[in-house]
Length: 333
Image (tube, rainbow, N blue to C red):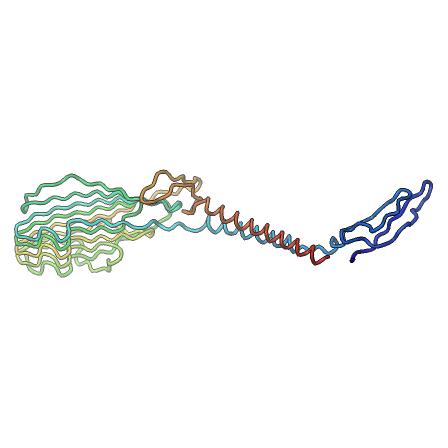
């Protein structure tokens, strides 16, 4: 029966020093094995394992707490990626018989908050068809998306019959809240187009920049049937931005019948708004499986997820602390 020595003494009335009555072993719980019952006793007891305590448990708890706080900080500071992209496509591979008329319009309005990762877009389309230069327009179609629309394609491989007329326009407005840079968008247009014809008016011309992943590709390989007319322009204010790419693709491989006419225009603008770094966004109703919830400032991470991870780590630390203390007790015995 392992233990440690302890003194048990009594202090008699009028005595200056206590008289030692018993000096012996303590049991493993730190209590005297036998106690003298006479007199007034002063008993100094201690648990044998108390002198062997180690700061290991405290270290484990502190480390786990630090990991939890680091986890929350990393989640909070992680930049929010833009949402998945939507695509707009219309008036492709249509009206390829002689004398057809085709007019198509698309307007894309993108909205992105870089701090919260909130993104949405609205796409408005109009399609007009009928005889060349005498078309009838349908009603405008408006589609809302819970993500960015990053590509628009229209009027490609269309109106290839003789004497056809095609007019198509594309307008894109990207509104971005936060720090973003803009630059002139790459333009690739009127390449391999209208080798012979009456009118060739391309702005800019030549325009052979690589616009395969971002920018404008327009009027390439078109109006090659002879005697045709081609007017294609990209607004000088058309811009790309550093937050996401936008690909405009229209009027390519089209109006290749004899005497065909093509008029295509593209304008992509970027509106930059100052970020509000003090507010916390609260999500509302969402569609397409989205979830509306509280998000951490400057990130798209859900606060509940971050706190859940931190709580899990703290619970792990408590468990580790309990195991450590139990092992210390066993080792002392």
